[in-house]
Image 1: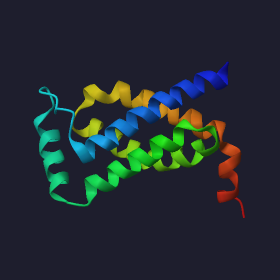
Image 2: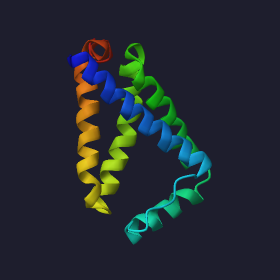
Image 3: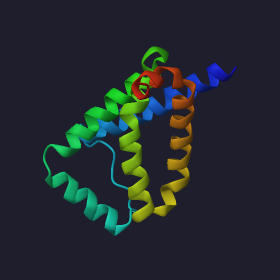
Amino acid sequence: MKRKILFVLCLLFGLMFINAGLNKFFNYMPVPKDMPEKMVKAMAAFATIGWLMPLVGAMEIVGGLLLIFNRTRALGAIIIVPILTGILLANISMAPSGLPIVFVLIAIIVWVIIDNKEKYLPMIQK
């Protein structure tokens, strides 16, 4: 049962990040009207750096795809962690109302990392 729950969570998590990554390329989702002004300015500043948003979007797509499949889930989690860190810091500093969703995403990725800890051990052992 635990495996099925983790699969469904990773599927939804992966699809959400794939959608967010595709939006960075095609801009099909409108900006929320209640977004804080500081966050709008920060997003505009990031957009002026021509290579940044396509890079983040590509990593979101790749990480989301890898998270869906059990065999590649550990690598997908490693790719998504820096993106989640940026999302967490942005929400802490500019839009605290989004923190509950961020904490749920962090809990899912921590579960994935703990579930795949044996795959990470060779990286930290001598």
